[in-house]
Every structure is written in C-alpha cells, then in structure tokens.
Image (tube, rainbow, N blue to C red; front, top):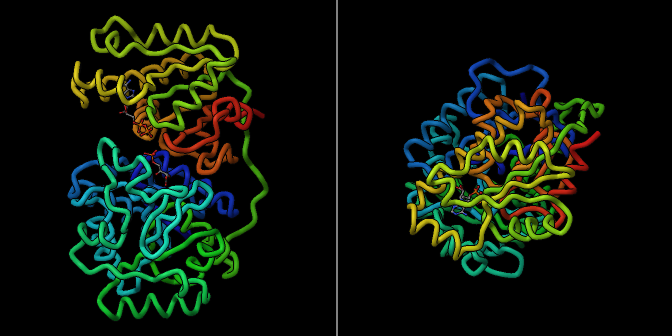
Amino acid sequence: MILGAIGDDFTGSSDLGLMLADGGMRTVQYVGVPEAAADPGVEAGVVALKSRSIAADEAVRQSLAALDWLIAAGCRQFLFKICSTFDSTPEGNIGPVAEALIARLGTRDPVVVCPVFPATGRTLYLGHLFVGDALLSESGLENHPINPMTDPDIRRWLARQTKGAVGHVALPTVRQGAAALRAALLAERDGGRQLAVVDAIDDDDLTLIADAAEGFPLLVGGSGVALGLPVVYRRAGLIASHAGAWRGTNGKAVALSGSCSKATRGQVAEHARHGPQWKIDTDGVMDGTLTAAELVDWAMAAEGLPLVYSSDDPEAVAAAQRRHGGARVAEALEHLFGEVAKGLAAKGARRLIVAGGETSGAVVTALGLEALEIGPKIDPGVPAVRSGELVLALKSGNFGAPDFFEKAMKVMGR
Ligand SMILES: Nc1ncnc2c1ncn2[C@@H]1O[C@H](COP(=O)(O)OP(=O)(O)O)[C@@H](O)[C@H]1O
Ligand SMILES: O=C(O)[C@@H](O)C(=O)COP(=O)(O)O
C-alpha cells in the first residue's frame, strides 16, 4: 500500500476513494480498522471512521489505531480526510487528530491543510473557505445541527483546535509553482507553524499542492487534495496500471434516504415524479407501529426504483426532535435504516443507494460490510462501491445532481 487515508466519516471516505480510483490507484475503503492484514494488491487504503462528531479523545484513539494499521500495511504517505466544509467544532476533531497523527509519525515535515474541492464549489482564498459564491459562514453550514460553521477563516478556526500555531500559504505563492509552494511550506514549518492552511481555487492548484508535498508523510484535507497524489506516485513508478475490474449488477435496486440536506430533499422531490416512494412517519417509528419488515416487503414488491425516506424540511425535523428528542429520533431512524438494509439484502436486493453520511454509516455497519471496492463515478464525490454481491452508493447529503437516484441505479448496473 502506498497511500493510507483515515476518513472521519463514511460518505467522505468513498468521496476520497473515488478521487484515488479515478487517478488510477487500486483503492479499497475499509469499514473501521480491519482486523486482518491488508491485501498486498491494494495501492490506496481508506479506513473509514465515524469520528467527525464524537469526543476528541475518542477520535484521536480511533485515528491512531487506523494509522498504525496503515503503517503496518506499508504506506509511505498518509491523508487525514476531513469534510470539504471543514465540519468541526472549536474542540475538534480536526486539530487534535492532526496533531496526534504528527506525533505518532514523528514527523517534522510541513503538513498541508486544504479542504478545497472545486467540483463541488468548495474553494479557499486568503484562508477563507467558500461554498459556491458564499462564505462558509453564510452558506447554510452556519446552521449545521452538530457543528455550526460560523467562521469562514480556516486558519483561525483550526487554531482554536490546536496546541501549535497554524500557518498559511496564499494563492499567489501556490501559483508560482510547486517549488515555491514547497519552500513556503518549509518556511512556515521553520517559523513553528507545521500545520499550514493552503489556498486553492481550481484543480491545477490542487495538483501543485500534491507535487509540492511529495515525500511529506502527512496531509490533511478534503478529497480534492488527493487529486494530484496518483500523478506523483505514477511519476515515481510506484503504481501499476489496472484494467477495469469493476463489475456492476442489474439486481433489485432500492434507495434509502435519512439525509435532510437541501440537495437530498431536491433529489427526493425529483424522484417522486416517476418513482415509488414511502415517506417514513417518524412518530410511527418512535411508537413501534412502523417496522422494518413492512418497509422491506413494500420495497421488494415495488416496481422500478423504490425510495424509502425520512428526509424532511428543517421545520418538520425540528418538530420531530421536540416531540421525541433529537438524539433519540436520529438513533431510531438510523437503526431502522440499518434493519431495512439488512432485510433487503436478505431478500435478494443487490443495489442499495443510501443518502446521508450518518445514515450510510448505520447501513454499512448493520450489513456487517468490512471492505468496499471503489467503482465508477455517479456524481462528483460519489462512486458506486461493491462488497461481495452488493453494490452500494453512499451519498453525502450535500452532493449529487437532482436526478441522483436514477443515475446511481444506472451506473451501478452492468
Ligand atoms: N425526519 C427526520 N426527523 C429528525 N431527524 C431525522 C429525520 N430524518 C433523518 N433524521 C436524522 O438526521 C440525520 C441526518 O444525517 P445524515 O444521514 O448524516 O445526512 P446528511 O449527510 O445530509 O447530514 C440522521 O441522524 C437521521 O437519522
Ligand atoms: O468532503 C466532503 O464534502 C464530503 O466528502 C464529506 O465528507 C461530506 O460529509 P457529509 O455531508 O456528512 O456526508
């Protein structure tokens, strides 16, 4: 294994997996830290954790366990995959995990921090993160239920989470080329700022960043920062060419959505125009009158691409949270989606399209999947993935075009 990545959530990890597989690396996404040793044919391993919103010390513990496994697999470079909207709180977990990884690697080399992902509109200029044409703090992310992103200055936000000072390399230096950028990163490190936020606007900037960081053991970023890594490895003769070994399936397809993000709600509305849908009644879930078995039977009997969803607008979500408690309703719905996925797989469904990071984590865990082979792109940041006979799509709430569900079913087919 050449590159070892630690992803702080499941959908984000498949986003990264897609970037690396697209770059020609044989990539596997592991569900948590595997017990067995890695398959020697894997060139990029992404250990997917659900560590974004847990206590910082637990996120550090899990991330170090993942790092140790990746070191044992022979990786020479490591990437801590965070969200392109830098989802975190003043307590962490990006800063504490990054500093713990630096300490365990014993590295004094600079560490690039770059959440940029131009294909989905995330750019960074003069240390400030944008989503489309809005500052992060005016993009809707300021209302995130778990980690409201109220400060678009990533240097300042990260510095609240770290013990050490945070550096910065601005776009004009990036655009001078890889050598100038590398020199600037080393200067930041010499000034006591080992973690350095790096500006980037487009894919060429990201390619330069990967080039400038050649040989530096650790990077921190969104999937975009991985764009240029396969290029660097191929130039060094480290990766082989792979004939497309991917196999899709035309088996029964079902979509499950627990994501309440704006993009997902648009996709649910679009699907309603031609596909069968079952909107989950949260009160029915909480009082036990709606069961997973009922949903499984309905979906297995439905024609086309059935969608089972709990996605709702912010007012309805807030009302359900007031009635039942936010954590309780989220847990009950995640459990339900996990049970539905298990029931569907047991009854022969072969394509599962899942919307929502937490929801995807619940489904993949309930199915007991250990490793996901990364397949073709459905939309930017979302690949089809395979585990045994099952083909899945794990969609981040904010990703995907309006026709995502139908498109996913086609891409997952043969
Ligand atoms: N109707 C609803 N009311 C309250 N909470 C909900 C509802 N539907 C889904 N949820 C919960 O909201 C969370 C959505 O998070 P997630 O699956 O990560 O989606 P996203 O990627 O869009 O953030 C999950 O914990 C889910 O169980
Ligand atoms: O970098 C990104 O934006 C994604 O890869 C990601 O991590 C999204 O997280 P969720 O929206 O919580 O699925």
